Length: 325
Ligand code: AQP
Figure 1 (spheres, rainbow, N blue to C red):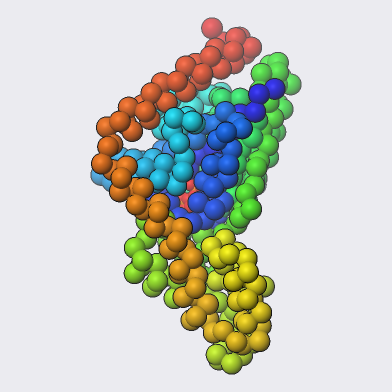
Figure 2 (figure 1 turned 45 degrees about the vertical axis):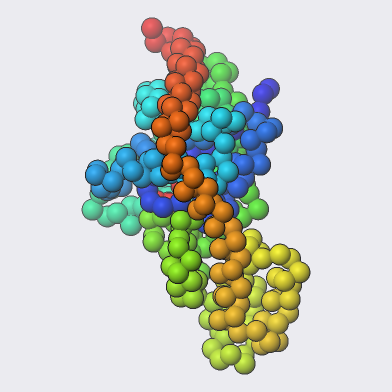
């Protein structure tokens, strides 16, 4: 069986280093060995309140950011979900297979229901059904995601098993692919870094804002004075060094922190340098990309057209097997 990857990102805010380390970096490593579908999932993003005026900009910014991070839209099919209406068509069909009990157990639904008490809508509830449709329309075998999405991929596998069992085997059972950074915590060091929580470092952060944000990040809370020894194993700032600081320097910071040889302020300054070394080239590439957006738009629309053809084929098979003509 061919190896096919599908993964999505919501245009629900600025892309942050959690998305970058947990998903996008992993996507880049797969470009050469898998057939890759990467999607800006705008239909998922409307399940929470959003500003209509900004929405198109958000979708387009998500495209530009992904390319600036290293997703080549000519090596992969980077596209916009709503350009392929078959996603929502298949989601309706899968709604008739998805057990309510499974959907009620979804952690993301429970969390978002608490976060958006005034807007607990059916789309929020059936979010994993649309996500399953996204994945299986392209018969994806692998789904590179952060840890927060693993429960949804398990759900997708159960739906695929039910479909294949009832109507005949069409779909492979998709497997999650976790990156080396499956769960980046927010600046509070407690909740997952997320666009909607506002606890993030965006990839488009200026150096000044980056500095402010990192300086405000929570460290080992037991370390009160500069002379107290720290515990890097419970410090979120130190855990970020793992991704932005060369290993020798990181080992030195760890040893020095444990013996109070380095304070949290200096540890944060080193982290700022490390993160900036990653963000600066991404931001430079972004500026270059913005100069020739017309060509990029053509590529993204063409990717959407190609995806639509594949999706139409899959829907033809689905309807045939289900007796829908
Ligand atoms: N903190 C994270 N650490 C590792 N991976 C993460 N991902 C998201 N946050 C982290 C992964 O990034 C991909 C895109 O997910 P998303 O668009 O749902 O990102 P988000 O920041 O989580 O967006 P929202 O709008 O704020 O959503 P909720 O409210 O669900 O958190 C996924 O592969 C995800 O796993």
